[in-house]
Length: 349
Image (tube, rainbow, N blue to C red):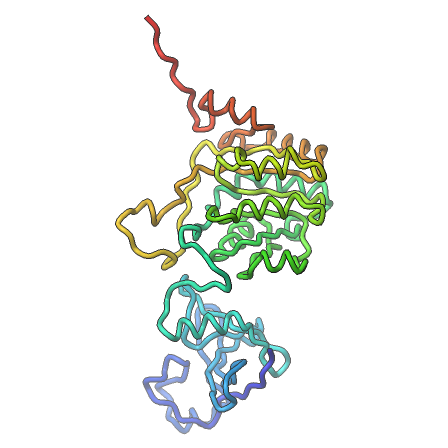
């Protein structure tokens, strides 16, 4: 929603309010002559304004901070878990267009609740961010997709429907893939309403609890999803499940036979700060209890083979094994190569 704002002017400021950017060395009369209040931050100069937040009474005036250079609007007091200013909207001419979800987050933080909030039911054990190494391992596949689609890294549209703390955007951006859609929204409601963003490739590490993976497999192998490529980071037991087989190799209407990228060193997942209650076990706070791997489908058998060949030619083969099928996965386990070493043969007398 858009609300009109007005600049702070003609108001004497106390020394205790110096955090909003007034100069304590100036006289209050000089402060009265300023048309607005500025904050000198390491990132930019922020201008203080008052505004009425969406849903609030018109007499409930709130201080916001405006970056005129970028057009971003921030909460004057609340910050994210990473210590960054919480963006709650953007400039729209002389008005502010507020992000209603961000406003709710700001109000929650103002109430003293420092834990995360989501517009849907969650399980705290699902809150683990994918490490950068996992994305680096599939970079050659993404590069091959760019080449086949005639796109640059920055123009390849990536969709990750499951939001945790947004690190997927930062990780993929560090690899050159800056066009990533990962929002705090109920993806199942989005899919049902067919309001997905436009995307070229689907990449995600879904929640492992309840029936999330089952729902995911049904969605990405539906006729509505089409022949878009997907890369899923999931536990190594998923390929044994009936719902997986029914959605892929036993799918009569949209057959697909994914290949598998198996890291030789187990990925470690770390939950964002304050996303889990403190427990005695450090393992609970540090990682998923499951060994995970990438499930990859190129959209068609021909494209799938091309992506697998691209991976096999890449440097990532030093860190990961690749398996064309479930039987090849079984061979990897028997040989012990998925963890970087072969099993020792039992000595016979």
